[in-house]
Amino acid sequence: MNRIRYDELATLIARRQPACGSTTVIAVDGPSGSGKTGLSNGLAAVTGAAILHLEDIYPGWTGLAATPPLVRGVLDQIAVGEPGLVHRWDWEAGQDGPLLRVLPAPLLILDGVGSGAAIIRPYLSHVLWVDAPLEVRKRRALARDGDVYAEFWDTWAAQEAEHFAVEQTRIHADLLIDTGD
Image 1 (tube, helix red, strand yellow):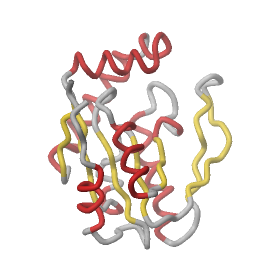
Image 2 (cartoon, helix red, strand yellow):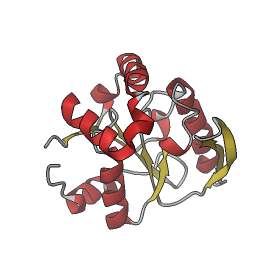
Image 3 (tube, helix red, strand yellow):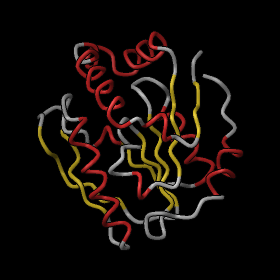
Image 4 (tube, helix red, strand yellow):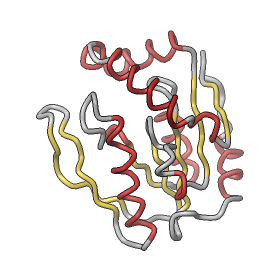
């Protein structure tokens, strides 16, 4: 992964005003295996940001399209100073799990595919697009999630392609980050 200067990224982020009540929300979007979670975790370590990992709320392997409205509901509540509530997804049971409370915070990172969708953008202060070549992304994703993800790679990739074609998230990104090896 290319060297990311988290201190410089934090300075860039600090220049924008919150767009979600008093919370500055950063979307870290891009295709599976591109390095979004690593970037989100590194940025949170430097800034003290809270993170909403969208993998905690995607409603299953075919639920990408349903996720941006769920995130928007969370941000609607945070914008008025209330905790955002959304069901975690129970991947083993294939159904909604317990409620996840996302508290208003000075800085919130949305980590995952779909985090920069148009329905969410009014609440975003920055959209970061993270990408890498397909072969690198697939190798990373399968190394991370192994056999569990392998059978769903094509299903998820097709949803991503459709989602990104409609949303044009990369074009709307404030910063493009290449994490190719």
